[in-house]
Each structure stands twice: as structure tokens, then as C-alpha cells.
Length: 197
Length: 197
Image 1: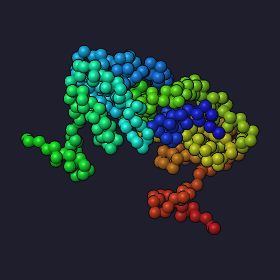
Image 2: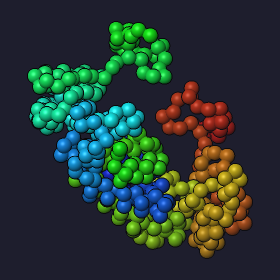
Image 3: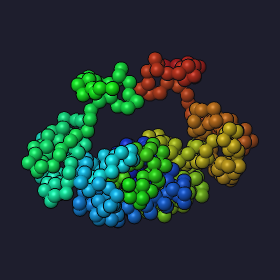
Image 4: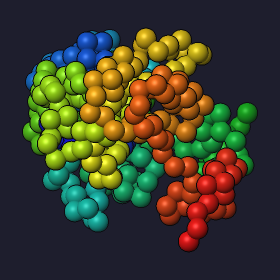
């Protein structure tokens, strides 16, 4: 018989993406063994984040302050909005340090299969931001999946009359990628959008 | 720029076995999105376990009470001790519901490479338990690895004069296993220990 308290913790941890019952058990033992060095700081950090992190009312990013630092940073280009599906995508762009404008997090993709319609996404706030003025360009950084591209098309139609420039990410060979391992769609896009050297 | 509080939580979560930076990021977003349903209960369960769980002074098991319920359960055979390397091994045996005696958790294996000697393991308590009397048999449920078997040999020598019967787990074909996929060592052991039908 395993302690019900420990069983309960294992069951909850196993609900995290990337963890199953087996790795949750290992994680719990690891936490108990490293109580001072890892267990206590992790519990404290988790409590802190869950209590203080909120969704930015402007862009949908997650931060302890609202509006988030990305929306208020004067060094970032306020005329450029990059639309992403999820906070994870925003984090990926920030880690890459390749974008110095503002963001807009949709909170998902349109999906007939999953019953996600425009009203379920953070779209009204995007329309409001673009019509308020001061926006030069909207970059649609949607995933290159069917649902992602459907969402991008929907947004393109919606923003068409706003006078704002709309762009999307380039498709092509990933940097460091070998042709041999690429799918047909990527190869086709890379060939179609070839550029003079 | 990602919120330093969130970055800190990701870094701590990434230290858990089976999680890396990428899955830790996904886990944190999952926790924030499911704050009420998962985040809060998980934080509470973690705080509770880290505050209340202790090592059983008799067997080395982890539980909220000391001695643990396995050591005090009158329905379990007190004359039979199963020696395991880790609490995870105890859990595996308990899940399988195949053993109804008591346990003894060593807390590791002897390893010259990692500098783990007999004094680093829960061995004195095992000697004390076997010499105190009332123990009929000690089952060495060590791993079938080099270090596990070294530890088992060491314990066999140590307990040799105690008058207690010493046994080890059977080696052979795992139930449900196909011969084709088994290693030579297991096949050899299965053949050597063959039994009449």
C-alpha cells in the first residue's frame, strides 16, 4: 500500500503534458529526496506563479503585470504586431530574439473539428487594436498546419479593409535542415519562393 | 522577454527526471491555463507531501506515518523481509500485489564507481532487524545489474551467520516476453534454471 497522499500527488503530476504515471512516480521520489534543494523552491515558485501571473489585457501574453512588459516597452515597435496562436509561440520568438515589435496571442486556432469558432479566440481585441490606428503591419505567425492556415486566411479577410499591411512567415527549408529529410510541401514551397542569389 | 517568475518555475520543473526545458515550458502553460482544476490542487498536494512524508525508521519506506503502515500491518508476515534498492522498487512490488511480508529499503546500491560504500546504505538497520530475531527469511530483490548483484552478494556474506534463510528473485523469461527479443544472459539463466513441467 502506497501512502494515499503520495498517490494523489502522483496522479496530479501525471496529468502534466509529457509526464505519465511512471515518470510522475520518479518525479515525486526525486522531489521528496531533494526536499530542500528542489521540492521547497519548486512548490514556492509554483504557488507564486499561479497567484501572480495574469493574462495581458492588451496582447494576451502571460505575465505578473498587466499590461505586460512587451506591450509597454518603449524600445519595441508599436506599429508592428505579430499574431501568434499561443503563449508558447510568443516565447519561442522571444527566445530567438528575432522580433522587436508587439505581439497578439490568439489563444488557439479555428477548428471545426474541435468546435473552436472566431468567438472563442482573442480576435475582437486584435480588430480593436488595428482599427485604433498606429498599426503599420500585422504579421500572421500562424502554424503551417491546416487549422493554422485556416485561421490565417480568416484573419486576412477580416483585416482586409483596415488599410494595415498583412504579412505571413516565409515557408522554406529550415536553417540547418537537409533536403533529404524534408516533406514534399516544404520542398515545393521552398522551390516556388526561390530567390535570386 | 519572458517573466522571470515563469522562467524560474520552468528552470525548476526542468530539473525533474523525464522533463527537459521544452516539456517544462509546456507543463507551466498547462498549469497556468488549468489553474483551478490542476494548478491549485497540485501545489497543495506537493506542499502536503513535502511537509508530512517521512522515511520509516524501521524499513526506509516513505509515508506520512512512522513506522509506516506496511511495518505495522498485522496481516503482513513479519518473519519475511524483502530487501529492495529503492522506494520505487517497493512501490512496484506493492502495485503487483505479489508480496505480503515486510520490506527493507537500502536506499541505493554499492558502487565503487559512484563512491557508494556499505556505510552509505541502510544496511546496519537490516542487520539489526535480522539479529533481533523473529525473521525467518530475507529475500534479496536487488536489480539484475552488476551493482545490484554486487550488493546482493555483499548482503549474503553479511547475513550468512545469522541463521536466517536468504533467497533471491528468480531469473528467467519475463511473463509475456518473446524469446526473440531476450538478451543472452536472460536466455542462459532461463535455460539453466529450467524446471520440470
